[in-house]
Image (cartoon, rainbow, N blue to C red):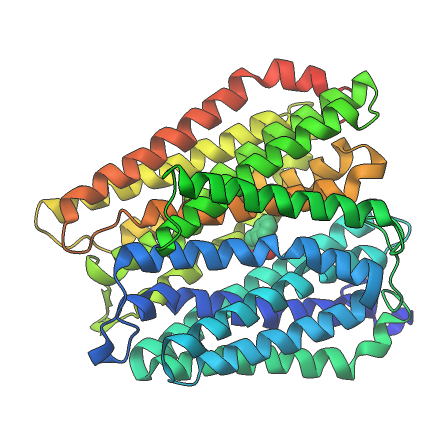
Length: 494
Ligand code: PHE
């Protein structure tokens, strides 16, 4: 690597990955900012004309699928494609997806577009992070700093995408918005291709990291047994009437039930038959607690694109200096606050550590969940303004987004690094997968929660936010109360 061509003192390959991920997130979050708005807009106004419950369930299913598909995406790169090719193919698939969405050709083309974006993101997202790690074979603080810069790229892309796409879509035409998301991904791909030489041979060959060698028949057998179990479970739930898979909401509930039961079985299997030492078993239990915390955190946070977005469109006074802001653009506030807050939080943890006051990981998680709940408390009061017959100012949303970004800082980077440290080394790939499954479950729950949002019945909105406050706030308090036990289970891991 030529240091003269570096990127803020980092390998120049990092700038290639930084801009690829920045453009990918531009397209992902840009499109997500208008997704539910487009689905719930009447067909007469060029929307899809679906009701809120169906749209929110589809939103939850789509965003959950994006993160669930990172599991096969990581496997494919490790066993067949290698990371570089996986990123390239994933990016092309995303581009195709957004291009399909840009065509005003009805529901079938729309759903095909969503499926392409989800599959492509599953292929691109986990592998680009793996490649970032590969640029620093020595690990340590330089690698952490590399990931930190990369996280900035994610949020800068998300910020710009949500502004650009929502302006184009809401002020001009929905499909122009989707088209702009496609252009973003195209720029990312061109940049990736032209600068691929900066990556050297990192991720050129598959490294079979997660699941052993491709010829391993045991993993194929396990996968088959697993798929049969899933089909039987869904069939049983459907026959007994617990779920109804004829509606989007029913399918979302079925997928939720499958994610929860499969994850429980996975943890049970690892704990009982994973050949763990006593020490490792306790750490895996901590990862299980983190999984639940992360799922609940994202269940609240990911409502930015659903219930917060509908709230902004249907109830908020979005006029600033005489100009009405597009509803979707308000979501750009959370990545903006993340970019501002990330350096402050990084130095806060370092300063507290110097004073020996750095909160333990469970306390940080608990505080993150409580801060998220506080963001919903703000929205609860904003919803009361609506029920009193007035239009709340966007300041409520700004304040809530600020609290959520602060919560994200205490949960997302902390959880990610804790999973890698707590996991028994031979299970680290799978445990990273579990972290993404937590995000998937959270996104799905966010869609199901938001399904209760009825634009014609504002009196139900405070109750909806109150439910989220109860779940996330209680989880946050539990993390803090259980801190002594969790800390003991973590052993020497900080
Ligand atoms: N903003 C983060 C990102 O887009 C959110 C996220 C966290 C997604 C954890 C997946 C897993 O990368």
